[in-house]
Length: 499
Ligand code: NAD
Image 1 (cartoon, helix red, strand yellow):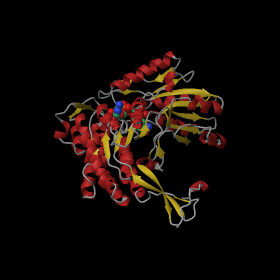
Image 2: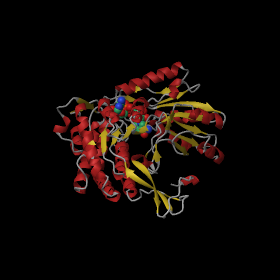
Image 3: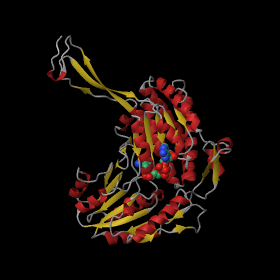
Image 4: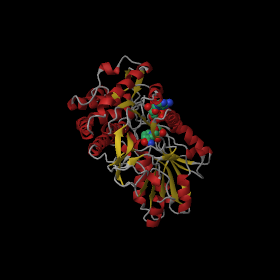
């Protein structure tokens, strides 16, 4: 299929793709895909007002009926899976199965949210006062801004939107300026679901705005947008989080990671090698959960590095549309330059680099690299920083305490794992004195989370949670209710105030 065929199959028209100021290129070959019309900053007040008006109606629609809209979205996504997956590949450079996997994740969260729409439960609580009953009620909170990163250009919107919509909140989506085409195609899919759903869905329920940080900042600044879910770099979160908090809004921050795997002497080495290669190299190292640090016991480190170097040497790098490719392009030349710079820095700190070369032979013209393994003498500043590229730093350890201390001694706290067949080690890693991350796994890699669990991390990863478990509570306001069905007015804590 040509680029034009893919754009057309995803429902994008010439009018969508031409006449604007935002240039969109494919990382596969650098070809220009579109010049998009951007949302004017001056129009943001109208967008937010529409969302507020939609909120006043949508909060009155019963949650199970709101779930029906998300069920229809899931149906439309199933029908559009191939077309949208191909567009993810074209716009982000993910290999075909990962492009499709991203859409599958959207379908999965829709299914989850449909069930949730009938399970927005509050507690009933024992009151200390006779003739009284206490309970919790969950109410919609208001418009939810969804600011997304380039590397999961559509799935992250769906994690937020599916939950926000069943929780009674309208959504305003600002996608990455690097990946607006997949957002426009997804918005078309949403519009089809809205049309089938009918008049219960108010105008302005699901809006899309196109542009860079300035458009995002309008959402961050507005008191009429109580929830700002922002996914991206720690740098971005450091600006957005305090601004939203300063106006008493609720930020949900999903920021950078620096994910590690500990490989213990008892580990199943073949499984560990497969898990390392997928999680360090998949998506060309551009997942927030990509494996960036390998902390291997000194008795197995050399063997592991030898096995990994062999596996890395045969990794097919190239056009992500080819069925045999496992490593597609980086998002742009800037990402490639950063990888080269960080490898140079690691070398100057004593690192021994295997691989990590710029690839130009047989690729169509994007930013292609061979993944790198870097044996480091210590966890230096370079290792402690997230580089959004396929670099795997390797460190050695002697005791589990030392390994856990290394694993936790980075500013980020997203995902982590241990490979061990020793139950004491596994449980220690998962205990209060083990991994300090939002995600901690045993005998699987740090990336490739399922939507059923709450997703997110601690420290500079931002503390937000999205997706499964009770992450929905972040999109609602909790109300504590006390009902007195007695004929007396006793006060709590035995306080007397008789008049
Ligand atoms: P980025 O921070 O450059 O951009 C992310 C989004 O924030 C974009 O839409 C951008 O326009 C917007 N933005 C930037 N500055 C802003 C501002 N001042 N106000 C409002 N909006 C602003 O990130 P990126 O390069 O697109 O994505 C890669 C990063 O995202 C990595 O650090 C990765 O780890 C992280 N990420 C985290 C998660 C997670 O769930 N924790 C998921 C995906 C990506």
